[in-house]
Picture 1 (cartoon, rainbow, N blue to C red):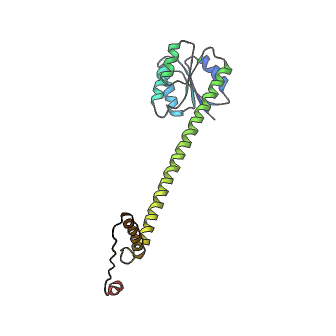
Picture 2 (cartoon, helix red, strand yellow; picture 1 turned 90 degrees about the vertical axis):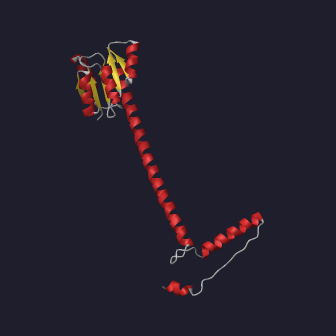
Picture 3 (cartoon, one colour; picture 1 turned 135 degrees about the vertical axis):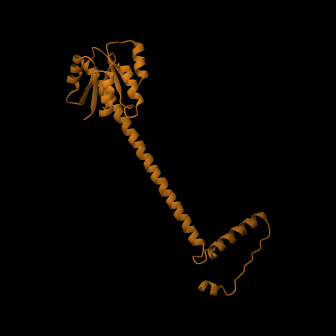
Length: 207
């Protein structure tokens, strides 16, 4: 069940909001901004309905504090106020509020706004989760590619070297000679190949 924090210093307003939302959400209550900050930090609600004008700490300051804390910054705050002045609305948005509802509010409108912002929050969280999963998958893929590249390098070394001496083997020499022949053919330069042998190397090999 999603959690909503109701913040208002007037008991009658809390009662109205509580009756409107109870049953559909887990509700928490606070009567001033300072209390709201404490409840939000401990309960981490999915949405806050915040009155603006309150004693001790008003809703604007409380929202600003919540928005500055990593644990509560993503919680959407809908301001509920009797004031309908543009300056107050702008101030609320500046500190992190997502919406405004003026008193007396229409229950259907409030419900619609609450539902909309809860859905937006859920979508953001799902998007963030998907992005993290994609980043994890990409990291795992990069690690796997690094392992494969390392294995290929080791295989190439094994194919081109003698396991006993660690020196380049016949396969490597054959490829190297063919590459050099092509290079000298392009440059029209003379090509000389010197092949040397080590006498009695079998004795060294056997030891």
